[in-house]
Structures are given as C-alpha cells and as structure tokens.
Image 1 (cartoon, rainbow, N blue to C red):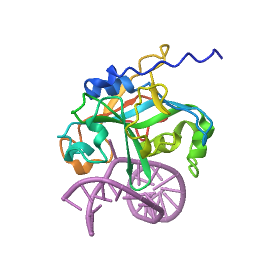
Image 2: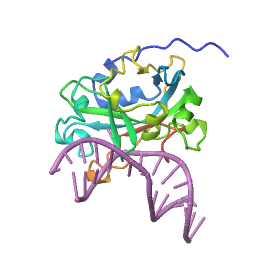
Image 3: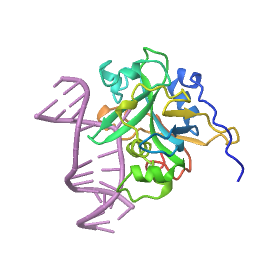
Image 4: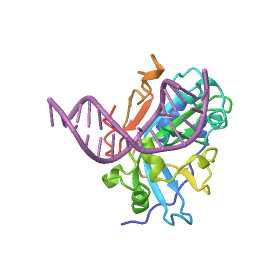
Length: 212
DNA sequence: CTAATGATGTCCT
DNA sequence: GGACATCATTAGA
C-alpha cells in the first residue's frame, strides 16, 4: 500500500459555469466528512452519480417557484450546499452551480465509500447492504455522511468545512460517463421528465439503481 | 425478477 | 390538505 496522496481542494471555477459540465467534473471527485465529537471518524467517498436541476424553467427543480426560505442557496454563488428533507425522513445533498442569481444545482445521488465505512454503517442503522452500497441513493448519501439541513448554505469548496469536496485524484483515470433521465420527477411533465440530466460513472457498483 | 408498502415531516397552495 | 428529487423490506409470480 502506497500512502494516500494529499487531498486537493475542489476548484470553485468548475462549478461556476454550465451545470452539466460541472456535473461531469464532479463525477470522480471526493466527498469528505471531517470527524467531530459525535463521530470521531473521517468519512470519504467517490461521487459516482449526480442529477442536474437547472434554472427557473425546469419544472422538476425546487427553484421553479422562485426563491423561498428552503431553496434560497440555489440562487446564491456556486460551491454552496443546498440540503432538503424529502418524504419526511431523507436528507438530500445538492451542490449549487452557476453564477449567483441563476438557480441551479447538482443532486449527489450516489457515492462509493472509500474511508470511514464503519461510521457510515453505524449512521445507517438497520440497513443491511453491502459496503459498496452504503451511500447508493441520495437519501443514503445523507444518512451515511451524517448530513442534515444545518449543512444547507455550507461552502463545500472550503477544505476546512466539516463537509466538503476534494478534487479527483490525479492518478485516477477520466471516468466513463453515461447519461439518462432523472429519477422520481414524472410529475414535472415533458420535456423535463425525459431530458438526460442524470449523469453517472459507468460500471460503478454504487449507483442508486439500474444504470441509465 | 417485479410490485406493493409503510415510515415520516415540511413545503407551498 | 396534497404532494413530495426515498429506502428497504415483504409479498407475489
């Protein structure tokens, strides 16, 4: 085993432009949860699946009704976390993209665990799943990394934040990316329901469901 | 293999 | 009051 290379910050510039381009840059990057008093273990994983929600016109986006108390981070600068609760029990993590005033974000749908697996499993009490699937699905990502709404508004490009991004390791090959329709948004109607804004790393065992 | 099903809280109309 | 960017399990074919 060679020692792990040092963590590199995730450049905010990669999130400031077009959201689909940002999504491709985010795949393969790392999600890091620093230890704290409650969970004294560093948790880390590789982002393998994201979904884009872009602009006021996207009928599937929380931003479609304009700014509200909940979705406000989506209207702010790139690199900020937007966290919301769905179905009364699952916290979902988004990374805000594009310039302030343009509401857009990437939902982190799946992460491949790299470190802190024991802490992830403890945080997922009751889930009998394989290690590689501890964070397969947006609600599972939130649970495995101990994310709740208090993280909404956090700067994910700040390496000292309790939850943050890190750049894809330099020795990692460019991932093979596939695209498909977003999940669970049929209510939005066409073309939103079919537009291929779900991006994933082909072949990852940690994807949230059958590959798009 | 697919389909059905609870558990659960907040947002916006 | 209706709907919701879900999950894991159970039941059925």
